[in-house]
Length: 192
Image (cartoon, rainbow, N blue to C red; front, side):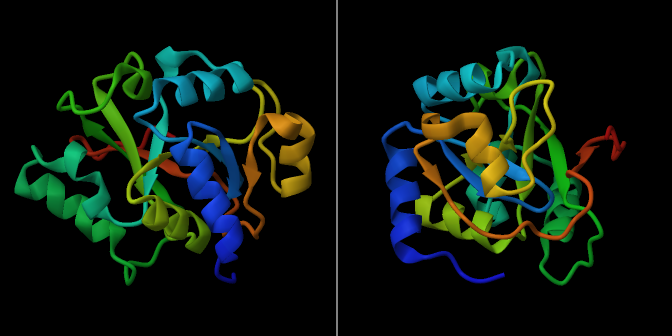
């Protein structure tokens, strides 16, 4: 997978900063993203997907340090579990999204009806580069209207959303066959 075109990256970051939506390849499917702290952007995303705010949203980051607001209250054991899973040398067959106990640092439109925050440190180079350039986490939900199959390429994402997404960041999927595993940080229970 190649590095992101600088002009396209800058357009995506501008879109995120302005409260617009972007679509991009992730580990297994195309994602739809926005600034998690911009309620109007999140409303746009939820409306576009036909998704209820109660379901909550996943946040992706380039590295665990970008999740500091969410992880600062964790025990050393919990933090170690997260750090170990996020190491680039740790072999993975499937990306892991961690459900981290909420410390009220994230708005309700991100947590939904849950007392956890869903975070994933992505090894996908485009996702990581977008988060790095944006300077923090971004929302990442599958690029599809609720009830439809997730887009697996840019063409499908564009068919679903057309010009309602400001920037489509082209690139290849990460080669994983399944969306991320969903694991509870406290219990270590796999929920998906």
